[in-house]
Image (cartoon, rainbow, N blue to C red; front, side, top):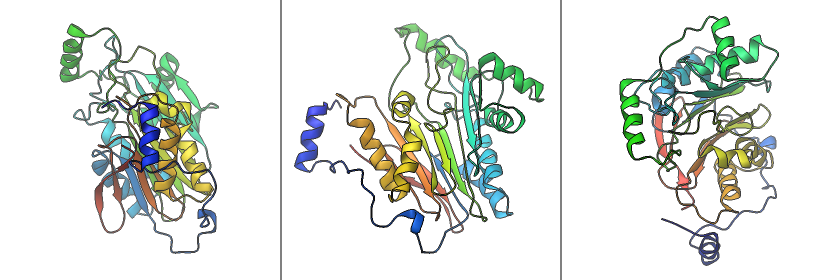
Length: 325
């Protein structure tokens, strides 16, 4: 379905879509919240977040840190060859290389990141090592691989037989350009609030299928694919990374919460910012998840089909996100 910007604004005026929110604070700022804090809590993107949440919850249930929890959670997804958009088994770029992006961020706003990393199954753990054992925030390409090997990580062929078959099939009719649709952007972002009230987040992906070699999306970029502010909340994004990068999406979600938005409203306002200058929303999907300091969670996406998983003391459930169109 193609919707022009003109028609989108017309639909908004007629009530077909909720009008864009202004950028003023709501009266109930999260910074002055006086209700009961719900913790620990885990929220992650997509249905593979259910399994990731279970691993993260095991850490939190034992009193572990949010940082350890988010790393443990997304490692499950990175190692699963059935998740074709993250880690091992992820679909390659148009030249046949599986390149991985990831970042991690803790309650002290310290982050680590890797981009275009090959041959390492768990880029999230390399990103954590960048944060803790290097003077840098981000390493990419061969430099990231050299660092990982120096840190004791082992090389592995990440291109599974099934992903190789998919790539070979794609090449037969491809116009040698990345395929963009609303289904293939299944990054996992995972956010956690631990029993001490501290927040951390992780984001990891193999990126857009058939992308140009060397392409970096939003996932390893702190402020775009992930942002954590321990005074306010945390957010992560998924979808067409270029669109998230252009508005520093996850940072914008957190800033919306700082001004008083609930997590869901903060995600919605950010989605609306992304679509405001688009002539067409065809083949564009972006979704965000967020958690605030009180343990409240939410998500929102451009189009139908995005879901997220939430684990608290009562349940680990998959929620269909509200969406703009």
